[in-house]
Length: 104
Image 1 (cartoon, rainbow, N blue to C red):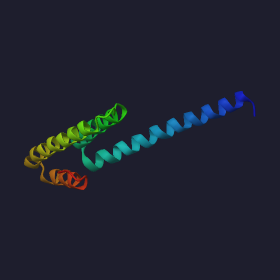
Image 2 (cartoon, rainbow, N blue to C red; image 1 turned 90 degrees about the vertical axis):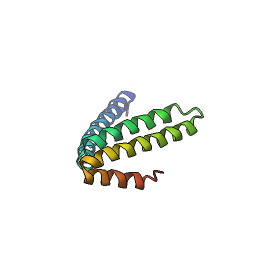
Image 3 (tube, rainbow, N blue to C red; image 1 turned 135 degrees about the vertical axis):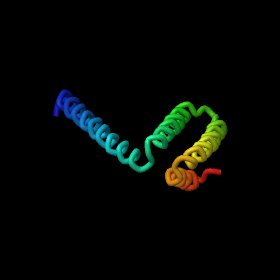
């Protein structure tokens, strides 16, 4: 197999992988939103983005990250209190997730 054929084949597989990744992402987003709702999905996305950036720039700041995560749990608990006043079942699901994550 020539270098050109190898490059074309690998590029094709790479493109198929990207398409597959996009399709799986769309399905997972729909599933996650159906399970936790729009508000919790937005919060989940913010926390996921924060932890992703923290992992990229972890230059000995693990303790700071832990502190920020602890603050995020506290803010999320306050959010649960607000939701509880409007929708008790959504608040109960959110509290179960916090407990499952080992929130203090």
